[in-house]
Image 1 (cartoon, each protein chain N blue to C red):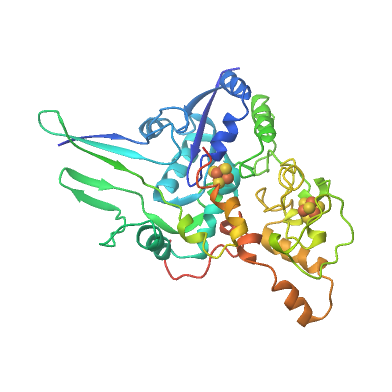
Image 2 (cartoon, rainbow over the protein chains, first blue to last red):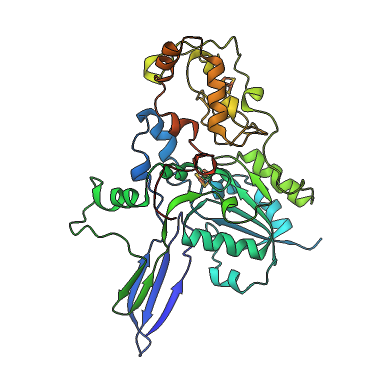
Length: 63
Length: 323
Ligand code: SF4
Ligand code: SF4
C-alpha cells in the first residue's frame, strides 16, 4: 500500500501530521490524522493557586 | 547583500512566539526584505522533508521557540541546528523550558494518565494511552516518544543566542530583526532582545523600605495600584528577573511579575535568586516567625520557577524514570 505523509500540517497552532494510505488502484483506502504532541497542562495546573491559572493556561495556545 | 535564509520553528511551545513575530506588523515587510523563509509552520507550508534535504549550514538563521518535550522536538531541534549557521532560542520555553516545564514536577506516567484517563471531560472506558508505534490495517503509524522531563533547547543543542520572554515583547522582536538585518549580532552566547538590568531596575512603581510581615494572595488585600508589589507583601519576581519587557505586567497591566524574561543578568537560577531576595525583605529575625511568614506563600516552586524550572538547578522533581 502506498503512503503519503503530510508532515507537518501547517497554518494552525500546534503539531499535526496526516498519513494517507492508497490502495493498489491508487484510491484513498484510509486517512489518519495524528497529533504528535502533548504538554500536560491537565496535570501541571494541579497545585497552582487558582488566581494564577489565567496566567498559565493562556500558554495552551498563543495563536 | 544576498537574502538570508530564515527558519522559524516551534517545538514544545504554544505559537505565541510566532504570533509575536506576526505582531511586528509592518516589521514583517522588513523580514521579507532581508530574508527568504524556508520553514515557518504557523504561516508557510514547508515540510520537514525539505529541511532534511538541505546541506548542513544552508540556513543562515533559525529561531526556535518551544523546548523539548518529546522525541520529535529533539529531532527537529537537532536537525535545525545542523542545517543552521545561527540558532536563536526564542521565548521562555526554548530559553528556560517555560510553562510546559512545570510538568517536571510530575512524571510522564502521571501526566499521561491525567490527560487521557482521569480528566472529567475524558471518555476513555478502556483506558487507552497513546502508543509510539501502532499497527493499523493499512500500515504502521508512529508518533513521537513523550519524555519524562522537559528540557530547554540548550540542553540538546549548542545555542548561539537566547531571546527571553513569554512571548518576547514586540518591540524586542523588532529590535532583534534589526540587529540581524544589520549583521550586528553580539558575541555568541549573549542574551538578545532584553536589557542587562533587572526588572526592578526598570520598574517605575516606587519602592520603599521592603519590610514584609505578611505575604498576601490577591483576595486577601486591597493593594495600592501605584506602589511596588513586593513592598506590599505581594509576590513579584522583579528582583530575580531580567528586564527589557517594557514592564508590561508590573506597570502596564498592574500585575506582579512572574519571571518570563528569565534569570536576571549574571544569575543562573531564578528561583534561588528570588529566595535570596525574599530573605532580605522579610521583617523578622525570629526563625519561628520567619517560618510562619514564608509559609503564607502559595505554591513557591510553581511561582519562583514559573518559567524556569526545566533550566534551573532543580530541573525536575525526583523520579527514577529515564527521559
Ligand atoms: S515562550 Fe510563551 S509565547 Fe513563546 S511558545 Fe512558549 S508559552 Fe508560547
Ligand atoms: S518587585 Fe515588582 S513591583 Fe516592585 S519594583 Fe520590582 S518589578 Fe516593580
